[in-house]
Amino acid sequence: MKQTFKSVADSRVTISELMLPSHTNFSGKIHGGYILSLLDQIAFACASKYSGHYCVTASVDTVDFLNPIEVGQLVTMKASVNYVGRSSMIVGIRVEAENIQTGVKKHCNSSYFTMVAKDKEGYNMQVPSLILSNHEEIRRFYNCVKQIASRKERNLHEVAFDYKSDDAINGLKNYNVKLDLK
Image 1: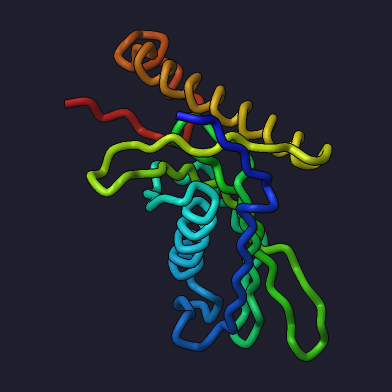
Image 2: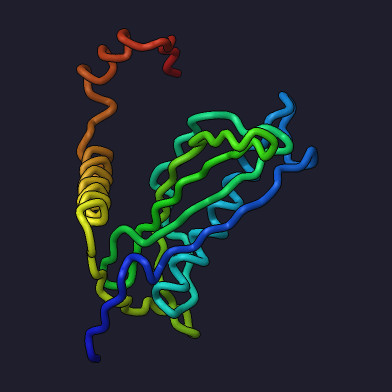
């Protein structure tokens, strides 16, 4: 198969939506779950646009809720592919909320979704290689490399950590827990 290349710009997707009262949580702010649903949609659109294939969410690596979003604000989500593997892509998403009366914008969320390209039978598909065109794209790519290494380290720790050991049990004294083993 001939290797193809696409630029980060080829992956960019932007969506905007006015936040309605029906999107609120019990405190009157826009519900985080609603934002997560929009994040998943734009990650799908971005990855599918880049790869040319149907894509599925493999993991939601980071969702940092930085500021609340209010009813009546215009939320804009900007997504781009920041990293590609063989069949996977890490999509970075920035969420901003704008007061449409004053024009004041605030950064509300940053998220990273790992998406995988699939063929019609559900098998993983190879994605185009990524062209990095500037230092910001290189920075984002390396941040994803660090994120992948961190995930592998976490998974290794989960397998290797002996939570039944005396050290682990005694270490619980440092946390806000009460041990009541039966």
